[in-house]
Image 1 (cartoon, helix red, strand yellow):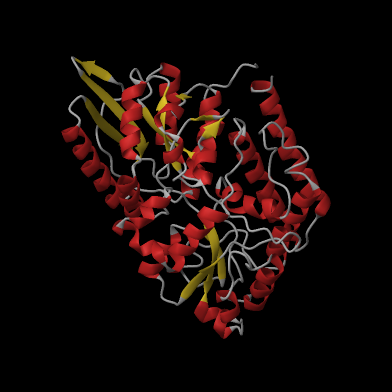
Image 2 (cartoon, one colour):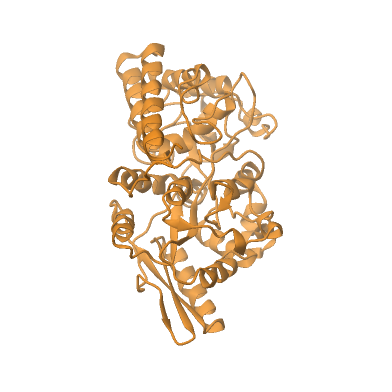
Length: 450
């Protein structure tokens, strides 16, 4: 086995951007020590996770008080780290890895579970979740938290992406909204139909669609399912190579389609803030977290339909992933941490947490809880349907951070070229994707190949 990497600043930047892709934010914090202590028969555990909105911070306060009152032998505290527009959370992890001062329980973003597992920063928790329990979680949740056939994390919530549309504006443009609303997971809009709608709704004042979530992790997160639907994922199933995958002919074709949306002026290379919410675009590849924002603030009638599929395959695929609880290498009482995680991820806790953070729950049984009643129909139900039937996790590979940053750079280069020239350059796309594959391979072969 090759020498494995210490957490790097390259990973830090990718992880910071991936938080936005999963829709987390906030600025409050709870105090708590950063190491486990034992006094007599009492075990003290600490949790690190990014701070969030008031509703979820209040959830943590209530739940930890509930646990601590019922379990005097295992006392748990949490440090909620403010990372708004900064790398405070990721920098704290980097420092703690170097100084051997990690908390007992560490929340990490889904695609980075493999990195932490491969580098021994988190430990397996397979023994604490039986098959019956795991079968209640979405397949995508278990997949993103599994590395080398061991479970290294567990998540209460998931995320997804679908196509939002401005009903008022589409109607004004003569688009058949009833047709869009008739679409199903088995018969979603195709790329060509999506492009036709975007073309019909693009004017001097509006663009037809929005495809760029951010300039970092939002690009692979929101767009990977287009590649999978067209026949090829980013990397091999075993996570060891990207050559022949991200730079395959079908991948080039996928990028050509995306670049054409930019080159034709149907989408902006630099979208304005809240482009869809502000009524500046007709459709948007947007996250499941956008539902709550639109319900509260949109001044127009809107809808959401399933993630578009390749005309070639018609295969329904959708993004997924979210933050997962893991046990760190510095935890001195893994059994106590495992017992707490079993409780933290029970059906009722998952349901109330998902409701508080406004994301789909990872457990199927959570939807029977009254707290998740809003997910029984409408836009939220569509995201649950995608999660349970078409979700495709991002690559499980310890070299994901390298892939993500390289892919984001390549896509930014390609889309910027399309915007400036008004054309789609297939040779340039191939060159950029070849660079991604090469950078991935160098990282994997250097640190992880046998």
